[in-house]
Length: 244
Image 1 (cartoon, helix red, strand yellow):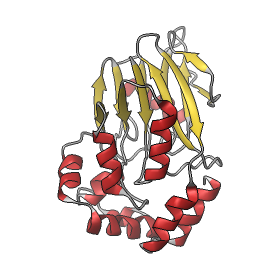
Image 2: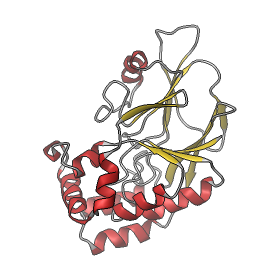
Image 3: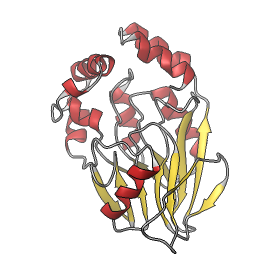
């Protein structure tokens, strides 16, 4: 089974469409949360996801839109964007988000938005945080999002206690996951933060137990123009051009 792994779409329909086209064919989508927030197309992005067989988690921005998370913990731009999203999201999308879990095990893989230890809010950005999280899940592989940065963390079968090895993605290279334990982040579709503005995602082959990180260009200016029309914060608009 060929699985499209995405995270942090953040209501960026142009980026999501580019990923769907680039990844085709695939059998199922696993979305690791934050379908909404920041971007201009929350309802359309959720509708497109629901057209496909999929599994989806709740992220912190999804919870914030529902009022399940205090947005005072967000920076000013994120708060403004979330308040705008609360005003435009339709009831069908709201009901869909309300039923999403922040953590689940799917076909022997642990899926979390932030981390298995703190599914909604913890960022796994460094080997120490990753190492502490390996004890929080029982499967061989955990997929996470939230940081907007594609990366894998690996611990060998010979040493379950570490050290934890960070492995930056090599886009287009198929990597075997047959040995060791892994925490894998596919990066962000809608708002990359690793210095590359291209949408980031991964292809997971559930039968071969392999993973491929991928990037794809999308019409950034299309999303930016939509954001300007609804007066979303300038910094959120400009950061899409630089991937930061």
